[in-house]
Figure 1 (cartoon, rainbow, N blue to C red):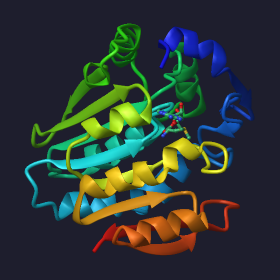
Figure 2 (tube, protein in one colour):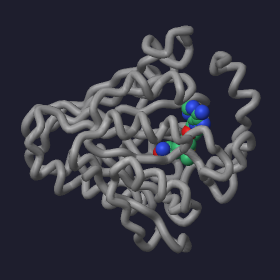
Figure 3 (tube, protein in one colour):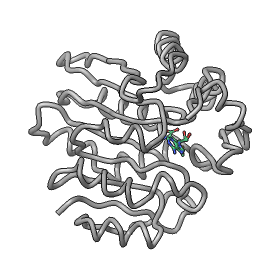
Length: 247
Ligand SMILES: C[S@@+](CC[C@H](N)C(=O)[O-])C[C@H]1O[C@@H](n2cnc3c(N)ncnc32)[C@H](O)[C@@H]1O
């Protein structure tokens, strides 16, 4: 995999209705019908994150995301965690092969002026991580911590920069998955049977998943790996999405 600066020229970003679109993958980073609400609906509610945080019995609750993109899913999850009265420590682990530039990330702030999104220290920390691109993906790790106002627990964000095949093996045991790697038809690498097998290996009984896609091959492969797969009404104009958990 080449370094991020080189990749940026390939993964050109265009804006349609204020939403970043990858020219390389010919797909949107989040819904034109409301990215914040989509993330809440598909990933946060799809994984029942709020009740998992409230009923948590693990020392650290770990969320794994395939495709960091603009960071929107992190901010939506962080918002739920911040508004919880006594949430557990959370680690949100993501991966990204084509990091967006700071300028593009900052357009997210303009789309959601009333939300806490990218702030100066966070964006500087992200930029310096994407500029030190090592060959060994286990070293391309960006980490940032937030402290909870009431109980002082931490929300830790970790992003591995590199291709999914190099990054995913570094993930620890995960309790909820956000599968957000562009649509499977446009980006099969993020949904390969190898990826799904690793996802299974890093899950425990009860680990949940949610995704906007309801592709038949995905439902079948997840079911074969031992996940209970449920079809639901999708966000906005999308007919279906899926979520479930490991039996
Ligand atoms: C739909 S976007 C993710 C949106 C994101 N979760 C958000 O909140 O903005 C999918 C992401 O997967 C990344 N991606 C696509 N193929 C990849 C690969 N083979 N390895 C690593 N990342 C990849 C893309 O660069 C993109 O950022």
